[in-house]
Length: 262
Image 1: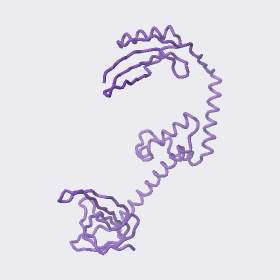
Image 2: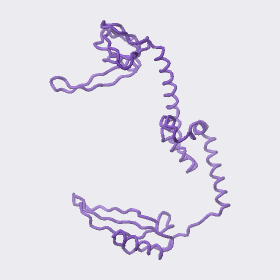
Image 3: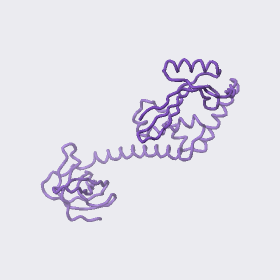
Image 4: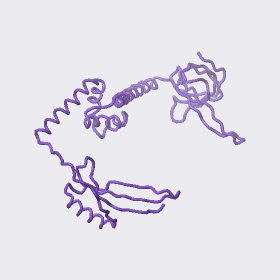
């Protein structure tokens, strides 16, 4: 890739309110095509003579050529009085209040979770930082789209559900029996709570995969092993089991037989 042109020029910024310095680069790509990059560099001034003087100085410091710029006069910047700004602030807050009245669930979630301390990683990370970004957008623009509202509500509801499940699972685990310690094949009866596929390579080099199941036994402990059903199935089967070294209430079953859905 080779650079064909690199110049600065003076343009009118967004809304035609401010003279700005822009950079234009032409370069030839490896495939022979010419591409162009035109980017904003910095604000200069609302006065053209001052803007030009700054552009000349900056171009010299950057060792970039400044091209002639043919632009007209800027549109005047309308500055609001203090009274007008105060009126706008009141009207804008009323717009936000009306939006929240129309979306009471979101309003409650913003009230409960929207002002948590920035260092509260459990809540901010648990709900998801997008929730707080959506709240900031409301107070920036005065309203949100239906998709933003639905997404923010779902983030909180998922967070609450996970917290409730975590508490429930902790209580269940505390009351669960440990995985039996035995070399014998024993019976397991419970619910398939998760399924995954594990990839592996056969001795002949062929790649294959098989479904693995996590089963919560009626005695409370959890075991992981071969395919005994689909998520949500209640099953019973015979298998050997090895207790985990890290958790006496978790184990690994092998060679399941006599598998039945119940």
